[in-house]
Image 1 (cartoon, rainbow, N blue to C red):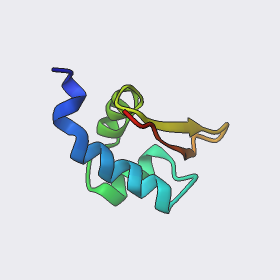
Image 2: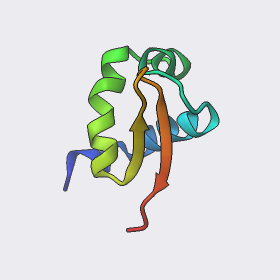
Image 3: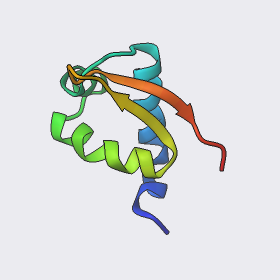
Image 4: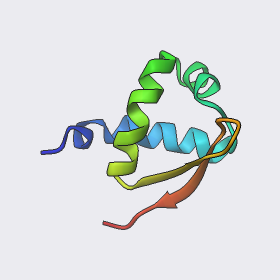
Length: 70
C-alpha cells in the first residue's frame, strides 16, 4: 500500500482548498489548512502520485488541473 493512500482525505482537503483559491501559495495554503508550511511542501509530491494534479506558476501559486480517474 502506498504511503499516500492513507492520506487521501488530507490530500482531498488540500486540493479542494486550491480549487477554491487558485493561485494560493504554499504558505497561504498551510495557514488556511492549519498545518505547517513544511507539511504542504511534503504533501505536494504525494498528491501528484495520488492523481491530484497541480501546476505551480512562476510566483509559487498553485493551480488545479483536476483529479485523474483511476
